[in-house]
View 1 (cartoon, rainbow, N blue to C red):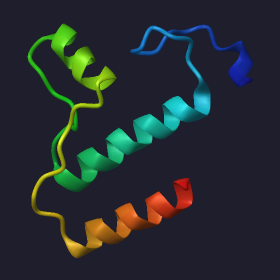
View 2 (cartoon, helix red, strand yellow):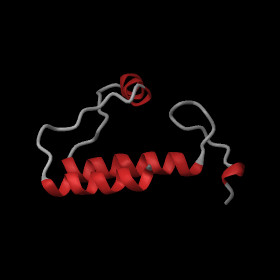
View 3 (spheres, helix red, strand yellow):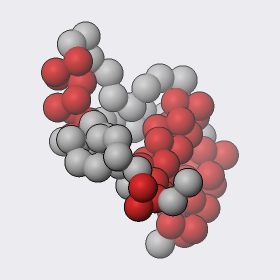
Length: 79
């Protein structure tokens, strides 16, 4: 499947763009695996989507050395 052929909308209401959307999803998955909680959460879908669009999340105060190394490696790869 070619990225140009994608018709589905993402949370922002824009057309789905494969690689950027997949990288974002990977980041959410990694956050959830590292911290044991979702980066974005709310009881109502409207408020949840608002938080996602505003990139409103926090990193827990405790970050282990291993977490720091993983985040550092990913930051270098993405840069």
